[in-house]
Amino acid sequence: MSTAQIVAQAVGVMGIALLLASTLMRSRARLLALDAAGSLVMGIHWALLGGTAAVAISAVVVVMDLAGTDPRSARGRAIIWFSIPVTAILIFIFWSGVMDVFAALGMLGIAASRLSYGQVRLRALAMAACVPWIVYGTILMSIPQVVFSVLYLVGMGVSILRIRSGRWQPRTRAADRGILRADGS
Image: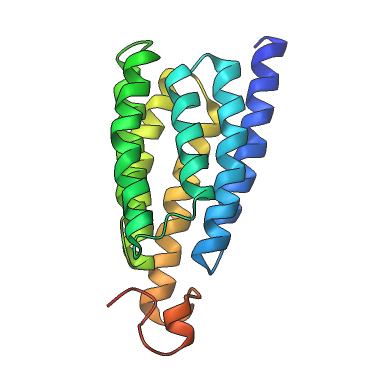
């Protein structure tokens, strides 16, 4: 492994640390803030590996996260829906091979998770988005991406089980007021 590849993998590990920390956040705002930071670092990782589609997608995710894409607001839903054609255009512009289809599918999963209202649905759709990212990371030989996607998938799964069992409740404004259970039902 060359020095450049080692640096790329190290940057990816830093991005992973931030993204994994996001799975532990009890509020959507904190989850999205850490996700934005992790996505920014992962964009650098992908740039170092030559994954142009993933760089573009990382930028879209950062913008979505910083915009606070709350699916309960019309503005938030519009930003999320707008991210889908933007991603398609970016994939077309930065096309580097069939592997980019997997990056696009991963982004579609990210957008679907952002459109979800409940914490459980958000996490389940985020889990589904991990599968194409595992394939993409394997093709580009991104050890951190593959490891992260597996750990993220497990982390989100564990948080769903904890929410469902009542042992852990993510914090939401509505749940704080006792109006709505954290899973959105």
